[in-house]
Length: 201
Length: 196
Image (spheres, helix red, strand yellow):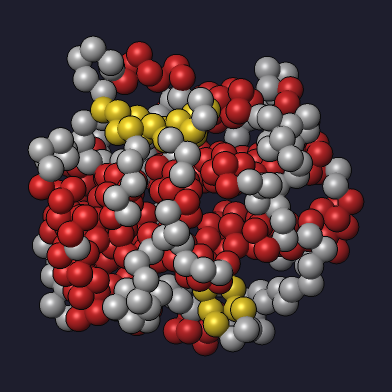
């Protein structure tokens, strides 16, 4: 696999999913986090669209967290084995990243309390409608069956932060719970999550 | 209603690829309520392939683009196309959504200006990313070009002040290239005239 450099803040945010993919497969990459010496403001002019995370591959910068996550997942063999499998992974990923994640972001970053509260309501409603749908889509130990894909990883992220923030439990969703438990117990993921350089927030 | 303009994207991709598809439109004769329970996420659009149903507009578009060789020639080109698609469908379109959902007139007027500024700002950034002569990707026409065309022509136009594309000549070429594509023109001429 080509050497890749990931640029982001020293937080989980929109980069953590990408970091988890590499960690799960135990593949090395340069995980560059902005600090006082190398700031985001310094880096911003180099980014394609003024935002991070950015992945640098062979000296070229690529943007958009989900585009990067899909690319890295594909490179690591975490997008299924056929285009229909990839479509299934993609739609599960979108159900979380497009339908729910923006509202989760607004709960924290919304400009007014009104916006924050509306975002919390929307995130909660959408999550409650989506969880039963996702539960039905789990084909085995993981969404596609026996193999982990990007769909499982994004759900793992969502369960650990989004669901916790919304106070929604997975008690009624045994298959989804199992995905989260299995990934939590995975040796590579455990190692990554307990590593001192892993961002706490 | 504007969401169905986004859905032109899937139909453009089929048209470009000259692929037949069953364009099932819900309305008076075919009731959405009857189909909603079997739509994967209870929403339109959804795609049916060999009896299996898949939801999520963006995912369907990516799948079709890959199936019809309109996704990019290499994995890195696909990453690049995905990036600009997300820039339009998330970064720019989010500003649109805040405009559409704003009820207070004074605030709406302010956001309206922001929509135009945001679009211009991103158009300039997209211009710098363009690697082809009249296509976003070096290898040729891709769904990235269709997304750009769909956004500029169907979603932005009619609702906001026209954008002067002189500062972004390559972007203008991309939009013209898709607009002048004979398969797109044929489909636009033939398509049913539902209100969007």
